[in-house]
Each structure stands twice: as C-alpha cells, then as structure tokens.
Length: 300
Image (cartoon, rainbow, N blue to C red):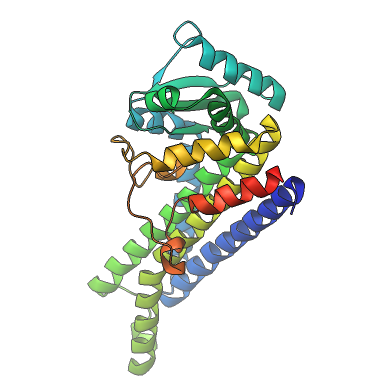
C-alpha cells in the first residue's frame, strides 16, 4: 500500500465510522422515545447535541489550552521553532497557526482550533529539548496535517456525540430508577418487564459503544495524519524516530487527562498499553509499533 492509497483508505474508514455513529445516535434516540412513549426525549437529545456542538466549536480550543496550561509564544521567544512551523505551513498551503508552549518535560504535541484560520499548535518544552530537527519537523507536519484534514472539527463533533449518548443514557437510567417511564398502564406486565430490561441494557451499553466508536475514529485520524505528515516532509523516518522517542519517554504529562489525551500525537498519560484486541478497542491512539510499521512501509 503506497502513501496515497493509505490516506484514501483511512479517509473511507473514518467516514464509514462517522456514518455508523450518526445512525447509532438516531437509533438510540428513537429507541428511548419508543420505550418511554415520549417524543420530547428525542427532541431534547437533538437540542442538547446542537447546543453542545455550538459551544464546543467556538470554545473548545480555549478550554483545552487552559487545561494544558499552555502559553502563547512569539517569534522572538523560539525563533527556530517559529521558522520551522512557518516553512511547513507554507509547504502545506495553510495559514500560520498560533504556537503555544506547555511547560512539561515529557515530549508531546497537539493541534486544536475550530478551523485552519483559527488553529493552534502546542508543543511541550520536552519536545524541543529531546528531539532532533528532522524529528521535530515530523511532529509539526503531523499536527499541521490534523489542521489541513479538518480533524479538529471532526474530533469535536465525535466527542460531543459520545458525550450526548452518555448524558442521555444517564438521564434515562434515572427515569427508569424513579419509575417515571410512560405507557406502563397500556402494556401487559410481561411486555413491560421485557421493555424495561431491554432499555436498561441499552442505557448501560450505549455509552460503551459510543466510546468505542469515538476512539476508533481517533485512531484512524492518527494514521491519516502520520501519512499526510510523511507526504509533507517527504521523510517518514523523521516522524517514526520522533514517535519512538516520545513513546519511550516515561514521563506523563501532568496537565493531560482522559478528556484531552486523544488530542496529543501520542498517549500523554503513559499508562500500560495492552496488546489484546479488547484493550485496543479502548486506546486513544493506535499502538506505536503499528504506526512505525506503516510509516516505514511508506518509506519503502
């Protein structure tokens, strides 16, 4: 598989997963509306999704940067980094993003912002100290690829959809426990019990399924950004070496959390990553060895 077919394949798989996610949301809303015989539930879910997406679109970058304690820098603060980002942005045909530094010794980086004209690249102090120039170029190219591929907007939508599923499921669980579901008097006792069990299963399993879908999309976008970044620098080995150093560094990023971990180029929490198929379902990033294998296949 060459570079272009790799990018095309990842795009197709990502949008397929997104389609499954939207169908899943609609089906879940319809199911809860039917089980509780209340159209208001579906209307509420749609309204919540719309409001949350609007808020996240405009303010998610500020929230993430605040949580990360990132500080904006000017060209005079880090001229070499600034020139590197500037040159790669020109090559990628993108506006120069704002550049932020996170005062952490662990090497890592992420991109955020609502679109290419309001984009941000944040790198840790450790990334600048521990990576060689070609490795740093690979990381910056990866993050610029996220911007060019509109991954930031996609990730925002996916996170909001997953959050909506979790909130809706929690709300339905409270209604169930309080015994306020409608329509009980118009159904037989046996049917009512079956529907209650079915709704409880849906309430419990829906957030898990939404999380698995969200993480699957996140992993596909990392593969795509790796391939696009390799295309930008024409040197896949630079990013491969950077990923090796980042993943080998034992220091976690103190300001990172489960809510922001998926944004980074590699897992910033440094938890023990299993290799079983079940463990991989809940990983924010693809296994580093899989990413290295794909990058070095591109090199060949």
